[in-house]
Amino acid sequence: MRKNKSVLYTLILSGFILINSACAQNPPLGKAYIDEEHLAEQSTVLLNNGTYMIPLQNLDELKIASVHFTNAYAAGFDSLLSKYDNITTFNGNTYGAPKSLNDLSNDLRFFNTIIIQLNEADLDNPALASFVSYNQKIKNVIIALFGASNALVKLNNFTVPVIWSSRVTPVSAFYSAQAIFGGVPVTQKLKQNISAVYRKDMGFTTDKIRLQYTVPEEAGINANNLLGIDSVANEAIMDQATPGCVVLVAKDGKVIFNKAYGYHTYDKNEPDQLTDIFDLASMTKVSATTMETMQLYDQHKLNIDTTLGYYLPQAQNTNKNDIHIREVLEHQAGLIPDIPTVEAVKPTDYTVDSSADFPTKVNENYYLRKDYFKEVMWPEILNSPLRTRGQYVYSDLSMIIMQQVVETITATPENVYVQRQLYAPLGMQRAGFLPLYRFKPDEIIPTENEQVYRHALLDGYVHDPTAALMGGVAGHAGLFASANDLAILYQMMLNRGTYGGVQYIQPETVDLFTAKQSAISRRGLGFDRWDPIPEHHYPSELASPQAYGHTGFTGTCVWVDPKYNLVYIFLSNRVNPSVSNKLSSLNVRPRIQDVVYQAITKGM
Image (cartoon, rainbow, N blue to C red; front, side, top):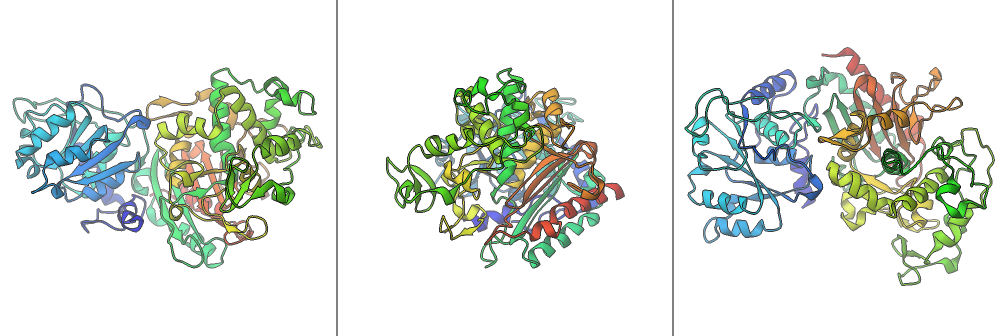
């Protein structure tokens, strides 16, 4: 089933548009694509949108079905929809005798939003009107109509929102799908009278509020100048720096490059897919814990100049009592890098079967005893020495402590909070902790084949051993996501806290946390930043001093560069089957980033 879906997913618009298409009619590339996209924009009109249903909002509350009949470009349309939210597709043609559209309505009962793709031939079905009429009473219904004005006349009696394109091309299908979510704007109104209902100058305009998926030329970049990404990625795979990887580039709010390379493992049984879910390792620090910290800072529930003892009573009688939150976020609290992990677990602390006494699943056939973190790890952290306070020392304990702070403030586990307050509303479909609760193992990229302590290939279980002993939910590691998920999250950051028309974090807070904060390190608050030492070339030789982001031990990174309006994402599993430093020694991540900057500089 997953391999069949990949035919749709690979039709993502990058410099390599529509690798596979159900209709085998590929759109143009480069400037020809932009020309066609412009024609699609000029021919697309939004009608009956008095309730402002389009662009769709409150994505976390929507259960969306897409229904098509004879639309030749349904696969492309649905593929673009799926970039914004979870979409279930239905082929209306399968509901002929002995089935009917009433049966289709029954199959749609668990969806509250239905997008119906239509053309003039579809509208000759007399049952269609009653199908729409029935569903619009209790659900959100949107019609995406393609074809000449004769088709629009047949919708005179329909009152649901209609996004109509007179052009019938792959690109017009892509455009309409993105317009439904605000990935592209609707700028046009009817240029002439179509019927007594649809008259000249009617129509609703909308703004671009989410990512657009298009070609590099749309952002002023020649696609040929990005071919160097292929060279670096393929070199990394050939030299066994990583079995595979996914690269995504978003420029000016547009995803202009998104490509998967290699395989899940070196046995080459499962090719990497654009939708694959990666263990982000320390990218969790900024993509989960710091994001929650910023929201609590906005709500005046957390003061970064207040001490740990203020928020954590257990810290009050320890050397952590007077450490300020700001010091923790800057990695200047004097914390040691980590505490002993799996090597310190006693045989009596774990078993191969779960039970009430051993509920914490570390991975397959490894269950930790109840309250192990509370009774062993947390006291170890609280009583750990402070060795270098006031100096920069990178520490995983920093974000484990911040996890305890934010969970105390919100009375909510961090994984639950970020899912509810950030990932689901943003439309990040595959991001989250504990991915095996929602996804199959073959959708998740495996990390290490760890045979010393955990005796298993870690697939869907967090690689970081400290996070593993915490049950997979930790402030410093444990988050899994796809490249598209991260593109959404960090486009929100690049937008200074807004996405999809919602302000998730205040602009001033984004500016504060991502700016250089310390006289002794390059760090922001939680975020890593551009390194001012020229020979370090970090994160890239060409990155601007405004760049911020983070890397992950598993072979991942995200970098945002406001100067260039850029989001760069690289995801890999360089720790499979065992930990290797080749990804770093080959400078794979910064070299790909260099290619992107060079392409921006060269332009068209």
